[in-house]
Amino acid sequence: MNIGVIGYSGNPNEKPICDLENIISKIAKIISDNNWVLFSGGRNGVMELISRETKKFGGKTIGILPWEIDGNEYLDVSIKTGLDFSMRSFVLVKSVDVVISVGGEIGTGIEILGAYANEKPVILIKGTGGWTDRIQKILIDGEYLDNRRLAKLYITDIDELEILLKKLEKEILSEEKND
Image (cartoon, rainbow, N blue to C red; front, side, top):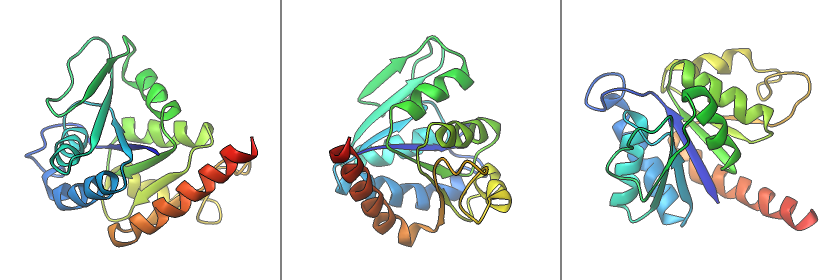
């Protein structure tokens, strides 16, 4: 399964990003232990931490980069899209089965909306700040961004994440068999 992890950009040693390092490490371990592939925006901040930790646990990392910039040093594959930040986010969303959101500002908000519009489930890690927490307050029936109900948004904490991902993997595999 391809897992997109989105969240704050910026210096990974500064707040609020450094405060999320433990959560990000746990996400990376779950991804690696299950032989899933990490996709991220490939730059700094949450993207760098999740890539570093995933590599540390032996996982595979792919960065979907804006313009022609270089990604962080922890990427196995860097895809330079030539696109701006927002457009590159749609390449990221189209490339994954599930999106996990950790904190984040407007770019993360765009990625959450893009995932929903492309009918990809989004997991919001509660208590991580930014758009990940803000968007939880506006969900219809606690799960959807609009009345079309294109894809569920799941609100969870880190201790429930692996169980939820395995459930979603089974659903995705079942849908693929039916297509």
